[in-house]
Image (cartoon, rainbow, N blue to C red; front, top):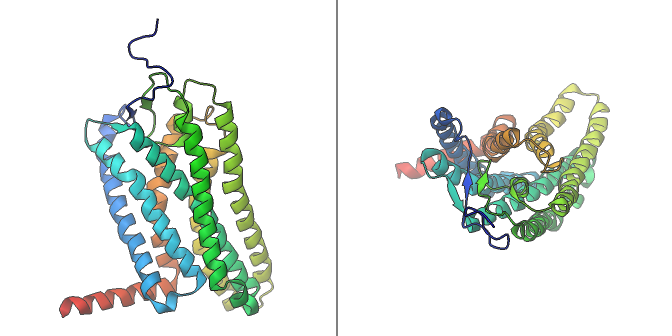
Length: 318
């Protein structure tokens, strides 16, 4: 006879309990403060980057078009997860509805895979600018850039659709406690009471395609860039070429290192304690740091931000 707290496998639970750090209640206030400050900084930083890439005509090159999309992705990334984390951390109620959970991991994986492709497109842009400067405008023309952006968004959506269809069919047998800060596909697979070998295999294949293939393209682009830079005799030109790539490399490292740890192992095997803090890192810390990395390392962006602030000050005085 089935226990009272169990439901039939074909009936999903009405809601899930996001444990977060409920076993460490003394950490909830510091974490709430960090989340709130980071979210505000992420919103301000990414909105600023979006505005300057849209409004400043000097930032009309493909690199800044991709940067605007990257900031929009980071903005949506944090908004998908952080408000729910703030509610759960700041109150005693730590639940999320089944529908809300499904939407959260669907959008989260859509944005994550889209960002993988956008980062690869940015590496291609840097390769064309440094290794093929005379043919740059022919390679990175407007139509090609728009197609790359459309490919990024559509491929990310396709991946998310597959994950949602497979994950939504998993039975949970009354299990409701997710040992995470938000809903994520590996945590959902871990929670299921069924055989998840097919889900593990599908996730591994999709991750290999959306993480490893773009990462391989990025590494290939930068190996060709490094070879081209080493041939430059003038040290000033060499430093300038490397300076245009350093921001992107820092963002790639912040994004890919946690993602590789999280998704290049079967969800049934990873440590949930470690995974939930790593997911916290790439869901809030990385999107918060990205705009500051590009602002501090890029003179064009700093100049555009300064001009935007000056324009805003003049409008306020009128």
